[in-house]
Amino acid sequence: MWQFIQDRWQSIAFDSYQHASLVIQCVLLATIIAVALAAVIARTKGLEPIAGALSAIGLTIPSFALIGILIPVTQLGTTTAVVVVTFYAFLPVLRNAVVGLAGVDRTLVESARGMGMGSLAILMRVQLPLAWPVIHAGIRISTQMSMGVAAISAYVLGPGLGKYTFDALATEGSANSMYNALIGVFGVVIIALIVDALLLLLGRLTISKGIRIA
Image 1 (cartoon, one colour):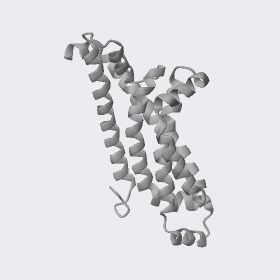
Image 2 (tube, rainbow, N blue to C red; image 1 turned 180 degrees about the horizontal axis):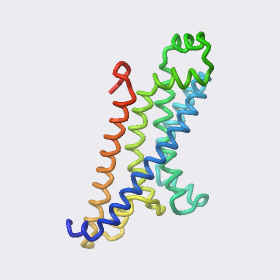
Image 3 (cartoon, rainbow, N blue to C red; image 1 turned 120 degrees about the vertical axis):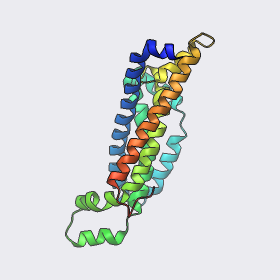
């Protein structure tokens, strides 16, 4: 196993970087879209149950089915991987953002409005900071889930460590099959743990102790 890694360490390191980069960029994009949409939903109460239902339904869609739908449109490659990972990353963040914004004390919002703050200022300076712990929890969940989805996206030649898992399946019974599988699985787990630790640190730095939920 060690010799297998030594012979391929540059490729493994590059694929690990690509895997982490794909997930982080997709989660960041999904977070921006989800928070913006949640802000709109928070102003229209009737949309909250619909958003929750759509999030739940979206998470039930098998990733391979979504990939199959996208291939005729986005073709094989990074584009399809980005769309798939962003889609699944978007759902938990949207759900938590809606819940977090809905949980902000309305008296605080009214007080801010009474001080002359506009809607955007209230959102940025009152609602989002108070909802951030819940949104942050959604981002952590989204990131961990996206690690696995990013590995599956190797099926359409997406970047990352997933190709080692598919190589293991394609060469089942060969001498290197087990090594490929171990690198594909444990590589993703290690990256997931590192990124989650960084997100946990981000939460410690950006969430005041008074409203911290974890």
